Image (cartoon, rainbow, N blue to C red):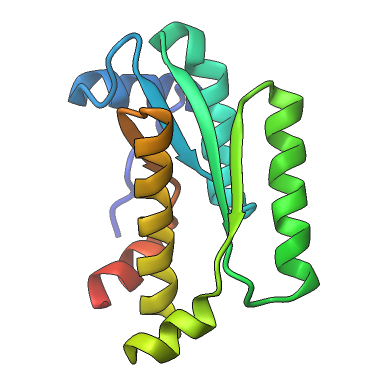
Length: 148
């Protein structure tokens, strides 16, 4: 079994290199960061916050409460709002009734949540004039996206 070489470069420098090599953002742009409150998106936000000056970008946080997990969903929204405030990043925090959308459109819960979330992100992008949207995904999320 062969092992992949370990990259000993700090995470923030690997991320900035990845962004710059692919031209993902341009100085002066506003980047909308989708933050669910989970580890992947919170890590993404922290790394982008660290790189904000180096990349010359502005950040805006977007969080959508899907209203699927009761108090836990409300807690996630509060957590993300507080995190954005502590980091000094403007945020748009909203809630949408994904269950009703699911029933109305005859979708699986995952499909309904994704459609509602991406519609929300599109609306926030238009409202604030963001140039790009950043989302944090784990490998499992990526597989789910491919399957759907």
